[in-house]
Length: 247
Ligand SMILES: *Cc1c(COP(=O)(O)O)cnc(C)c1O
Image (cartoon, rainbow, N blue to C red; front, top):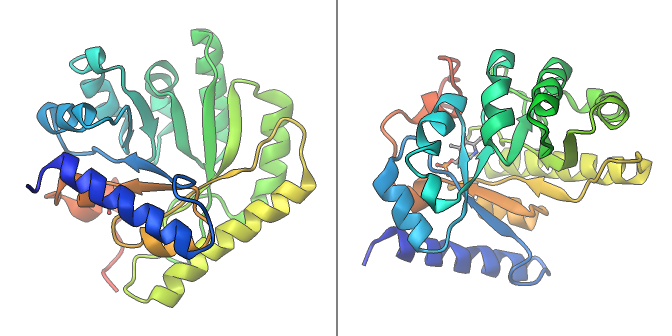
């Protein structure tokens, strides 16, 4: 009863209900299942249930899963902090990156993508919370960044923005993060930078996706609620030992 397929179905229903509650249509919010820390069996179960796009937050993990699961034709989406020296793996193996958060990473990715003869979709990760350890670009740096990517880096097709909300039980603070991202997206849309699309808003995880949808999310990234609990929880949200203290 409690299979990955069952949980996927339940979450899709909840996503649609939240979308309709906020005046949007069922099917207008998409689901990105996040398979980090889970192995081949769980992923094959998800694929059998209709999943073909999966989020991972470490380049090494995409690399180690890519070959054994090649027959599944999965589109791998990078959602975690990426060190510049691992840009090559993402340029080779990922269909998309949602954690593009600085110009030196954009430059490294563009160079590797040119070598591979590929282009990928990208969302810019924005820091919307005041937590000191969280990755993401400061909102005020976004316009300049977008102009530079649009001008110099045709291999990065910018489609919108991504964020992680503050890691607190306070729903008002969580909602404020999502609202900040949507308002920033709306302002950027008005600027209409040529070559930059600003439609997508990737926001919301297992614990807060219904709030994110109410605030305009077009895509939620869900791990735990589909695949179950992970052993190394915070380490996998905030890699490299930068987990903030629990609020
Ligand atoms: C792990 C992770 C998620 C999914 O988190 P859950 O709470 O397991 O749903 C979403 N986004 C990012 C960037 C992640 O690292």
